[in-house]
Image 1: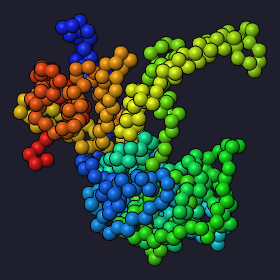
Image 2 (image 1 turned 180 degrees about the vertical axis):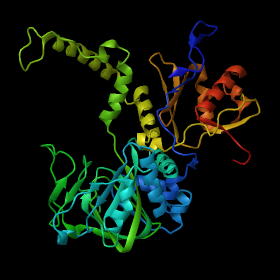
Image 3 (image 1 turned 60 degrees about the vertical axis):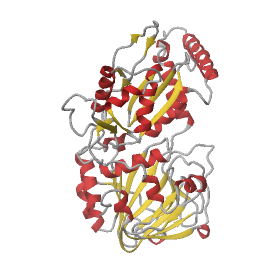
Image 4 (image 1 turned 180 degrees about the horizontal axis):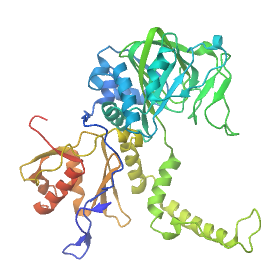
Length: 473
């Protein structure tokens, strides 16, 4: 975080905190094609169902099948997604070193794999191998592909769902009669049928509450494998195939599956291509750790562990000075936790920050930088608007002294204002599009100085949070 202007005393002698922007940008934009989000991504995906009905009846509760049309996906993300897009997105991710690209060839027959013996796990392959492996009859799966259109759509969808975890792109290409045997995943997922016809069998509700990873099941319904280490407290289910529902997916169809829902797939009558959005879940401990880190990191004692001498320590026991250090930190932690309430500004900020952050992999595919360098200073009559390249979330609260604060989040970037400057950002978010000079009138009392307003607007333009509006845009 760096100040847009220095903190200066006001006429009453109190410090007046101005806006701050995080200028440290660890993301790398992939390509020049940016996709402007519409704000209707969730509505368009769920149509004809409304988001309100989906959130009340299905989100995290039970699967939902939405019958679509072949033109649905091209309307969702500029031109749709076909096999050429699939190969291009994988080569692009591999060529740009996208972190987390997971490309595998998987030899399974699909819903009923018993005729081929034990399920064969996937083998990691290189991008240059995928077309050959597919021709040989393998399913090709790829997580964290590189496609800016899809990344923007995914980030917008996550924010509109108020989802605090990461969202990943996952694509499968299956030959005829191939697919994936019965399993459940730790993620919620939206399955989108791009090409061909695919048969799903799926449970009518999750069979495991918030699983910690993928669990595969054998033909008799028993657990065959887990892709994570099982804890002693975990109870793994035995499932009955007779209880599953069958769904046939055709181009444009959408299937939502909550975490822990059983499902299996099989291509029918030829090859199929599926684009899936995987929603990984964070938890309260994740959020609380982030909030506590921000509250306690200013104390040097919370930025290290104690150095100890080797003398006097008994094998297998904590040294005395370590116990003393732990005791002091635990006392401070109890005091901090006792001061936290559900309305705490720290928790509110972390919640909205998590909603704005789609995850490092998705961020790497978003073009959040300005479309072009700022060629001139902002003029009073310039038309500006909030960026539509990624969702923007915000949090309103008070600091420990009761001073109002306003935080704006854009990807991993953060802008904050306090005191008399809160209406500046708050009004900007509400209006979304405005004339530069009008921002001077947003103060609760009097007017903001044009010189300072222009400095703020130019910094927000340089950060990509604002962009120049064009006529009719």
